Length: 129
Image (tube, rainbow, N blue to C red):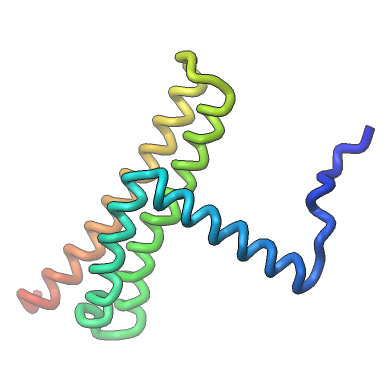
């Protein structure tokens, strides 16, 4: 019995167009179905333009903007893990709890990283340290 995915037959530009559509659908589903992603999206709407003001070089702007985008990326992965675990079943299981807790910890660390980068940049910009 073949283990190949019948949905993986697209190539070239057709594959790129369909992949972009799936990605857009994923972003829409995350925004409408995940309150944490929705909150972080609105935070990104505020912070990303601020990165251009706060950063003095392209590297600083990239770090500030990248840290915000990293939070969104990790939140998407966390939501995906939660969806898969919930698809398997809602009963309490040690491995399901571990998967969800670890994914949540990844979001927490990405938020700490983002806060640290923004805090250091604000400190330098506003206090001239």
